[in-house]
Length: 122
Length: 164
Image (cartoon, rainbow over all chains, first blue to last red; front, side, top):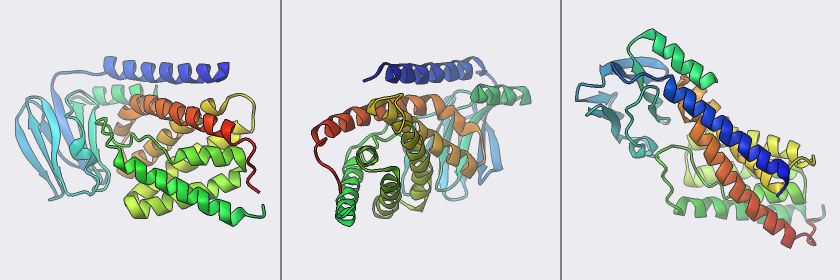
């Protein structure tokens, strides 16, 4: 193993840590909403603090409970979204690629949206 | 290469077996797309023992075949994006003297995940998937390093074998 290999590995770890920190500190925890979009267009927004179930086009079902969201059921073959851990923080998302369903948590104000995008770009 | 077809058949068979073995290992980190990438072992070895054209052909054939056998059309699309970017990066780096096999494989693993992430961003038309970037970087680093260490050991042991 060459010295350069270690530099490469260290660089990647640092890059990941910086992006993660930007994501954590660029996020807000209160007044979050759950946004569901299908095929790139908005399907609906729901409050994270209100417990409920949402059916998405007969292909997916999410459950909002105790301030977190899980994909309870999906008809896709890989079931990656169903196995995904629950999400509760700003910017987190569960994505069902086969059905093109994106469930994400966002701040209620537009300013927050920009912040998280900056976090990703950084 | 006199026995090109025969060797290529063996490489493809090995890559497919690795793809199959991978489906037997239950890995679920709660994050989609994190896999060991065992089949990449063959890509790295072929890249070092022959040339990038063979590795490219093997990569595409492997992804299409294993996609139809174990995955779906979607899986093929995402794997191709990751596989081609990863191969391009590894082919470029392996011709230079900057990194050992391990470094090249790490770069390949990380770029594989970035390629898939970009396709996922285009497919679902959201930057939200960028949230996975840190996890995917680390995952690519670890799996790439593992594949690099194994390929390095295999390459040492088959250094006298020439695929001609």
